[in-house]
Length: 357
Image (cartoon, rainbow, N blue to C red; front, side):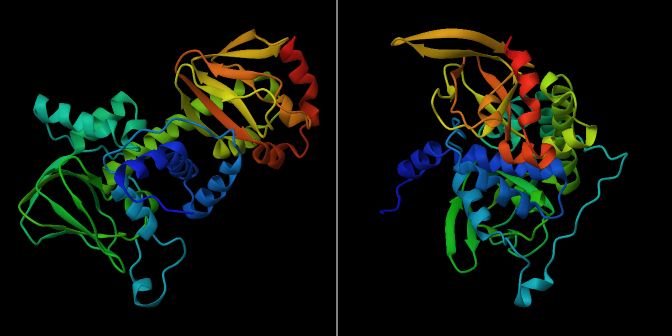
């Protein structure tokens, strides 16, 4: 098999397999679980993506290559040898902590907003959280030759490059790219409480916007906590799950994935194998069935409704095609997550039948 090398082919490959969204969802799940072993959770999540239903659009991010290099260089296991002495410190956020505020001009805010739109972590934040993050960014400068971050050091700041050029160097690979205006780097070490995965050196006078680790964690953890609260409220409103304890629902929440489907995007296809249960958090979808060569809309579902459970309750294939009629956010729960909580899904058959009547 021939690999992809040119930039356009790389972006097309990333988009084809939805790599950005899946990695982002995996990291967000680990944050929400507050796991001491995020790599194990992320690894288990990625194994579920063999399911052909895990389909979504992906955006072309300007800082794809930087994040891919950080992901590749980040250790999946405990470091060995001399490098094992360099360990990142787990950061505890004080209850009364509030991110700092550094006022900015409307022009700078507009530019930072564009950068956030192209960053897979920042674009997940709510408008209020993004505003808080933007205000917490502090302008910093570096001289040519300064090491902004050093591979192996604990992470202390996340950066957005404004002016100048930086060299990104990974041990064993050498220089992997040149970072320019708009490139963000350093967030993965903060997310994972891991050592820096690359060295970033200013090649000329550099201006950047830095976010300290406490502000970074508090804003992202705030999003994760809000997501968890929303997901619990959603599960509480599902008749199919009324018999579950709070602990069981929390277990499901930990394994739940969130995806956004654009209007017109097919979510599941009639006749396909099914291993995922869907709950609509926002938007509307339509269910269609092929009848005598024609396609007929059987029903429409909105926030709070669910679909896809029939394929989990039996060995049957998908009974209908479900398509987003508006931009829709769905919560996805795979068969394994249900079985870990419920043992057997057969007990849900009556509730499912009642929902369809």
